[in-house]
Length: 603
Image 1 (cartoon, rainbow, N blue to C red):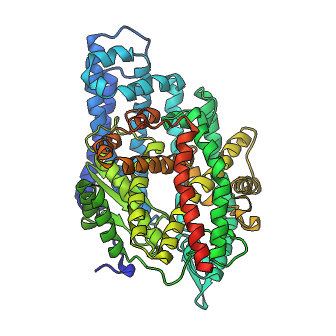
Image 2: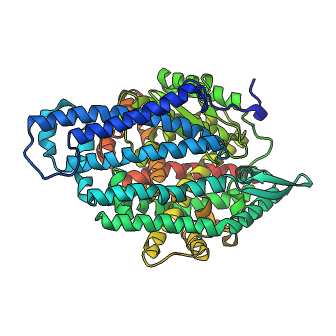
Image 3: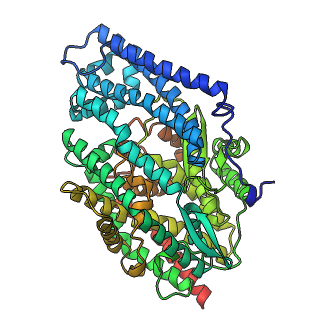
């Protein structure tokens, strides 16, 4: 049996025995050779920016030859990168993994250059004629039409090549600094009567401790460490946002947000509809926060109370019990979903143990074919169970994408949360049915805690990032300015639901989402995912059989259509606030139920 002290590490040996193995070295060299051969193929077929010309048979042949090989090499390279990443993320101090990852990035740069060349080439073609004449083109129609538009936002080939090469020592390097630096931060904290030196991820997990004094001291110790680290992190933020602003302008986008919306396959009308509904819901979330304060016997919540457990003597969820529960509940939807969960637990796809050097949080990483790997820092509270179900939903999404080519499966962040939220909701509803009132309150609170983060906190981060991009056009910002902008975003969203004196002014420092040049506004897609997933679950409840018939196909198509078109398959109009309000009504009902349970507890 697996105990909480011996939580599993993921098994990467089905790919290679280890980073030092001859098999890995052979695979690495084979991938380099495949990339170099692809470069030669692009050169042979003159793939790149050219003058527009009528589509002829030779061009169709070039397209079919190149895209087939391109897809294959992208798939091989992805598996190699995922394998190396599995070592980097579980131990950022692993110098061999870091070195091999750096080597890989040098080679991956060539692929990035080829992607730009391919996009420019597609922009010079009659795409509609190509789709008509080639079955392969028809299978990639959405990608081709999107590339045709993206080609109008490319700089010259020389400028794009230079930008790609410089990114390795620019935005990518700054993002790597953030990941490595923050994962290795140590916090000195007095616990259990003695001073301890703990990894930042462990200290942040103390936000879930039932003892408020522990939470407060952990929060204050965390803030002190972020304050000491603010100078290099501000430099990273300034550099990344400055680079994005420059490239956005040079590529002819109106703003980084417009470029982000295009990449996420939605438009401003959809974003505005969702944000309008979100802002309307803030008073309801403040009701939830005040109800949680009452449950904890507090006049108002502090920031360090956001994740505090409610209730006493509630059920713990040891890892193996959580695994069995998830398998059983996934089976209520379909045997296929159940088998996915059984494989994940049985074949050790999951790395669950928190430990020094391991990155914080949780994620699911597609590995190869129908296999994924899940990283978590497992806690025995209900939230740990819920997070596992969420990440395994991503693995199910990857299962459904397995038959797609690499260029077909480029799912935007907005749709990447579709299966994860759905699976998380399946588990939540089952847990509620089996729970007594005290446990119901705990489960509801965990769900509302997550919804509050995804709607309220995400909006604060969205507001922050908008303001940073705007102000960064004029000059670099100081750490004090970043802190002020962060507090302002929290003030606009949390309002009086939290003690404003305890707002977390360093959320900009600890959130990795800000530290990427190719993922600006890595925030609102989470809200889209939550609310879209809730809307789909409502459709499932209305007509389970009809929903099951189309759900897997929807998941397999998330890289092959605009979000609005895919949503329309289930009668959903995401460009109107009504859909988003209906999804938030599900959350409002949970808030009312939670308030009633708190009132009963206090009666």
